[in-house]
Image 1 (cartoon, helix red, strand yellow):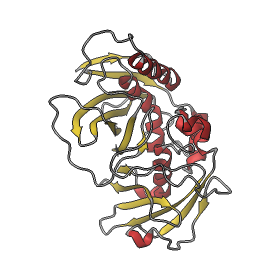
Image 2 (image 1 turned 135 degrees about the vertical axis):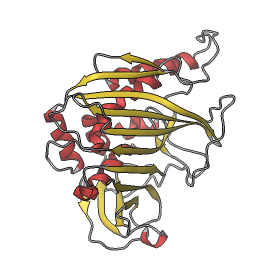
Image 3 (image 1 turned 135 degrees about the horizontal axis):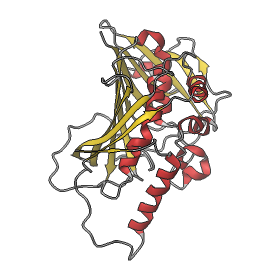
Image 4 (image 1 turned 90 degrees about the vertical axis):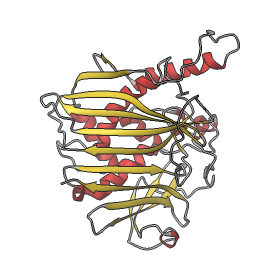
Length: 340
């Protein structure tokens, strides 16, 4: 695999523009070059050797997601710093899957030790694991982050995407998943052929950005989910607020009007917003080193009220889930496992 060094992490705005241009060229009659479509992943690893941490930006993220205001970088914030480099791979002309339309299936992070705001970071991204899926083709985007002074990787994130309806020759079939992935990916609409729908378009409008629960049960607990420990009241501004700190201004998150162009009745929350809030809810109990997993199910339409629950197992792993308040409509499930 060839290593390509970049001076800086590209902006997501420019990457979305490239993705839209690629999609438009593919869809326009007479615009195809006649060259065969790629069927393998680009054998390139992008590296940005010096990524400074903006302290004001970090504070904005911590405030929005409910993380402690310390110099330690939340694992979700490290994802925000590294995601554009992964996106840079997906918009390449030799990337074999259409970036606009990919579905975010799951995310897994391994944090081996904390990074801090005083660190200058080294960020790398590559694509791997191209494989067939009964609904299309899956791929993993891997981002690794280290402090510039240290040789070892401190943080590794693997984002799994599904290109629904896209098949490539010669790929082995991936293992079946239990629930259909419907969380929208980098630039596309959510949905799968398994358990996807667009949710209840009425939703439950909340009066604030977030709220704390009373530990009560609701319909989710009866469906095998944990007891609700918090209630998130998400407003129509939730997507725009996370976009402001993450840079991810995908139209499906910004407004009902722009989301409708991609088949949604309303805007939907960013998957990594819900993932990061779940991690923040675990809090210091996760320890300095941990694995953090989330599997996305049905999208969170905005505004909405989400019941959130967490539970600690005998082994010390924290499991969590989010579901539509008053129902058993699951939005996500996941776990946080402290590492020794």
